[in-house]
Amino acid sequence: MTEITKERVYLDINIFREWFVRTIKGDATPVFYVEFLSEHTEIEKRISIFSIAELVETLLKEPELQGWKLTKEWISSLIEIFKDTVSAKIIEEDEAYKGKYRGFYVSPKIVEFTYLCGDLKDSIHVDIARTSDLLLITKDDKVGRVKVVYPKVEGIRSLIRRYEKKER
Image 1 (cartoon, one colour):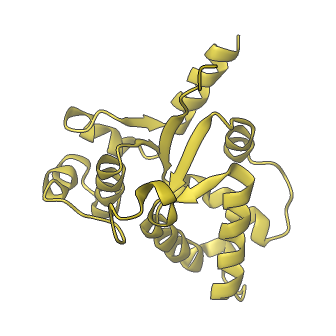
Image 2: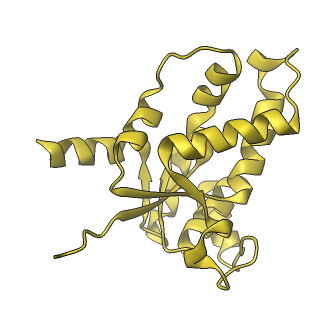
């Protein structure tokens, strides 16, 4: 029996800002990206401690959520729900990576990545994906500029189209 190799991806969790905002506000309207990832168990999904911290910052600054009391515990529980919903694991907690990294590693390539995409946070995501040998899935078009030095970058819409073609 042949084991099917899963595609391994690193999710820029900010793609899912809308899902988090809706969930906080009690809106159960489905978010397509989340539905897609939860249905596609053949995709091995990863997020990182850094992407979670960036999401926390985004939610705390989100204009739609001003006036909401967003506690650390509430946000943490939402992140757990998200991880369970799409079957995502945190790179730094994954057994497969134990002993390989403690926290996340930022390589000297970070300067080149920052030059190419113009944003330090996006560059850190690229470097995390590269050091973990994962395909970076993002919504940010600027990150695509790093493909000249790290070709494993793809937009979420492109990923969805690829899987829709496979299903036909």
